[in-house]
Amino acid sequence: MATTTADMQQMQAETQGAGQQLSTQAQEAQMNQGVATTDDGQSQGGMLQNISSRGFPSLNEILAQPAVKKATPGIMIGILLLFFVASYMAMQEPVYRPIFPGMNDADRQTAMDALKEGGFSAQLNRQTGQLEVEAGGYHEARIYLASKGLPSEGTASGFDALMQSSSITTSQFMEQANYAAAVEQELAKSIIRISSIKHARVHLALPQQSVFVRDRTPPKASVVVTRFAGRNIDNNQVNAIINLVASSVPYLAATDVTVVDSLGNLLSDATKDSPLGLTSAQLTHKQQVEDTYRNRIYQLLGPIYGEDNVRAQVNVEMDFTETESTFETYDPEQKGEKTRSEVLSLDRTATSDAQGIPGSTSNQPPQDSLNLRSMAPPRKRPSRILVRPSVRERRGTMSSIELSEQ
Image (cartoon, rainbow, N blue to C red; front, side, top):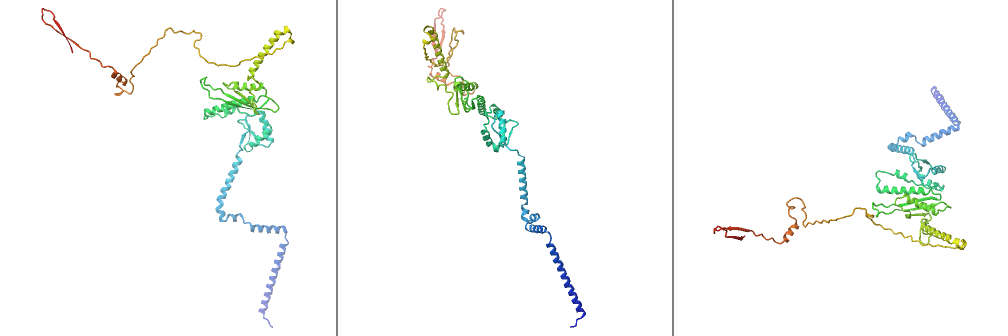
């Protein structure tokens, strides 16, 4: 089959195009092989990056969403509020409360060291000098110090707290109540100074006093004491407490002070050991009188019969009844002036004086005078005597005088 030149050229062109296509495919295959032989770490990182970029959208894409655009102002406001709250909490100092106010300096230093060892945040107030702890651990700190036996001498504020609580708006009743509380705390401070007393509490009943001595009500007091373990409170210490309290309160008698211990025992009952119902002072006086008479008997009979041959016992009955009488005496020595004469003057008026507002009504005579006039008897008109002389000429003399009543 004969072919022309045009056909041959067309065939050559087709063969050249097929060769180029084959070479292009071969180059692509080589390139794919080169990519496959690269570092495994780089290929894996690229895959993760592609996956992450495809799974999680970017920040710009998130902000470009309509819902996010609408919620953007609220989100910004919430972030600002959180920032301000965090800043305020960071700048604000923790709240501290005073623990056991009124401790002495030794107990305060010991308590501060114990709190620091226990992990509590403790500090000293620069204005008041009191030991303070954080309000959140206040009760735990009190329990911790109590377990350590602190404070050792108890606490009482006294007149220091009275000076701090003074105010212009304080009423008179509150001032009296604060004063009584301050006196009680000061007395408790003095009582716990006794070596055998661990803690003391004083109660005062201070009635409002009257200016009249007869209407004056005596105050009363009661003391509750707690002794140390293994120690006793003797009668001398009880009497010392009674006299201390009685001497510190005006118009308070020693017999009106009651002392009780923490177990409920009445320590101030002086008549509990006396079967005769006498006080300790009366019983002591009775015993002294009996000893005096017994010694006198020994001194009188001992030289005569011998000291070993004399036995004497004396029992004295004494009456301690007290009688109180009140009387008034004017010039008991009779040195004052004596009365020589005495005049008693008594004036009485049957009519009342004029009273009321000036006017026609008040100018009327009193009703009493009108009644007296109506009750008085009628007056008789006095007779008038007219003398009319009639003279007749009879021998130059007056003959008669006529009298007539009208």
